[in-house]
Length: 414
Image (tube, rainbow, N blue to C red; front, top):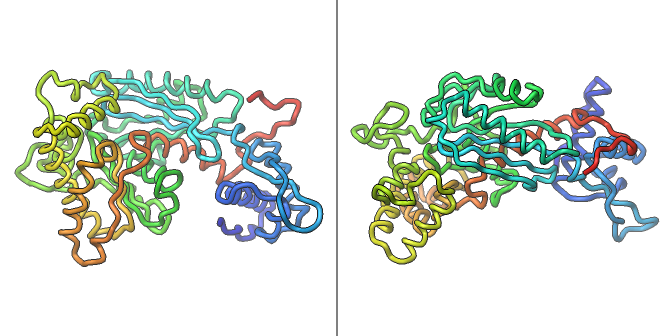
């Protein structure tokens, strides 16, 4: 349960902190009566009623049913209003652009993905198209307040400035992505942020995925690039300069193939999507066709594996073993409780995860490390943009007064 905030000396800051506590506890515990909120918070019922009234006017909470049990007159339940506010997440991939929206309960309410060749298009045309997709997503949430936009990018990001410092797979360097989107959308710059895809995927897994609430986990992306988002003690680990988790560029074979970063033998040259397609396919194979949806290509691979295609089975076993070698390094260094494998790793669990587990167990420095759970993500290929939407929504959970108050007469239609 969220801890009640320390008592700020500023009355406005105290009010904001108390408002934030109410919506956080409702998100975690579900609907509660005003009396229950008063007991949990230590605030008076009158104060709680004032807070609830303000949150209602901001369309962050609403009246639910009647509290069951207890003595005296039954109290009315207060619950999150899942219609009033949305968080929007955008995603830039090598071969696609995507957008998703979530409500205050973390439920995905809209999602769209389009094939797009980022390398051929270049920076400006890519941002043009991303803004177009974002505009459609914002149009879909009309009637709800857009808390913000967070963009997922496979690369190093200066989150303070919204600048993509380096994204080798996209061939981007020093791209002011937040500024570019704000100008094209006419959306407030201070409500647009940019972050690394692995960090956002780990956030999504921690807040809304199958490992929700797991305090120590590592999320490994399974895409053209490989990265790790690290949650330790319930907090995202960014490192001293903000670039923690670039595990895809661990050198596994100094004499190996050249990586997009310019070095040789990086882990992602062994287990990235390009390595999978190279090992599995011949020229003209629909599995490597970037114009086909990635889910359709994964279905083709699964079908071949299920029918005993030897090339497919051999390639998957080889990649699963290489995946496990890299994961074992991560486990020995960070000692997480769980390693969550995302992207295509999660799409092919029957052939990748077991070989990975075997390698992790064989390479653990102590017996306890061999017991780490290695699981596939339930969020599939949507984790990064879902994490972006949740990150955008977090602004409201930090400060509910960002959402404008609306009277019943002026309330926008749902």
